[in-house]
Image 1 (cartoon, rainbow, N blue to C red):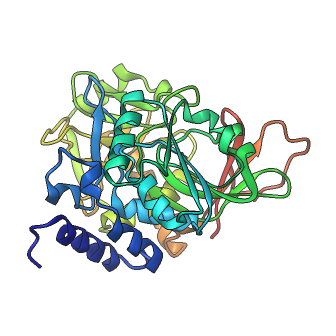
Image 2: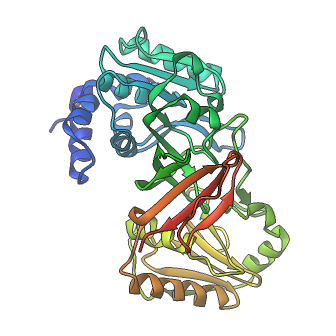
Amino acid sequence: MVLNTPEAYRTNLVAELKKQDGLLDKTLEAAFLAVPRHVFLPDVPLDVAYSDQAIPIKKDTDGSVLSSSSQPSMMAIMLRQLRLREGDNVLEIGAGTGYNAAIMQTIVGDEGNITSVELDKLLAERAGSNLQKARLGAVVNIVTADGAMGYAPRAAYDRIIATVAVWDIPTSWVKQLKQDGILVAPIWLESMQVSAAFVIQPDGSLYSRNNIPCGFVPLRGIASGPNITRRVSGSTLTLSSNEAEFIDGAALLSLLSDDTETTFLSSSLTFSEYWRGFVPYLTLNMPEGFFFATYSVGENQKDFGLEGDGFALITRGSACFVRYQGKGEVAIFGGADAIFTLQAVLDQWEKSNRPGADRIRIQLLPKNSAEPVAHPSNTKVYERTYNELRIWMEI
């Protein structure tokens, strides 16, 4: 196919998405074909606008991304989780460029309503302008406000979707969701995010059995949650961990400054096998005394012998770093405790037939619940802002 028109690029993108098994159904396919992504990314070349990648649209002064146009394949996954129907009343948290709202409006049709809340006034104005150009400006309602509050004037909603990563699900979202509705949001677990599809249970809790690893810009505003990132002094190496505030920066710098050794895990895993399989298992089966972190090194940079993106297992005097694209290669710092422990968990995962993110179950129990709710013995429990977060893996 000669890619010289927006229509050709759009058709090619949808064809690429269809190659990813189960990513698109006919309704989603028609919506992605109908909505021109390049209109929502006016300053981006066509080949980039129609690539299957997230595209930053606003950065902070330190270069970190504050907002982006989501990766189309991830959009399709979340919209399948959302299970939109014609006529649905939908709330979106995080308007971004307005592209996701346009896709959803195309699906819910003339009888449906899309309300998209955006904290950043300039981004909200741009999203509104983009929707006008796509001839959807009079239909999609863009609201400039803190998304943590939802948008009560157009509640109750059949569906709520967040296109930003959340530390917890705000109470207002649950109150504005219909009892039989679906709420899809990327939520932080142990230093990783999953797109969860929550439904309200009879006891008032939220439950999700459909959880897909993902990576989204964090929610800003009153429900933003703690800072879970830590940059190692004098480098581009950044760690993301629930334990970020407890990391001894000086001790970690000293550890990483020593000579590194390289070894290999017993299994050579692909990025997908790490991301959707072993990493979710590792985060939920962390041995006592260790903490898990994901890491990234600046583009085209190399710090402490590390590059790219991956994950790490760290304890006092010992750390090992595994690059997602390294095919099992491990960088070892300090003692061997971390690598021995990591290999032991990998062996356990292999013996359990490699359970992955598809086995993760999540429950959010409101803190004001009258009675405790039973949960499996292997559940990890975290106190969050509004809820008690419970995570376990069905083996």
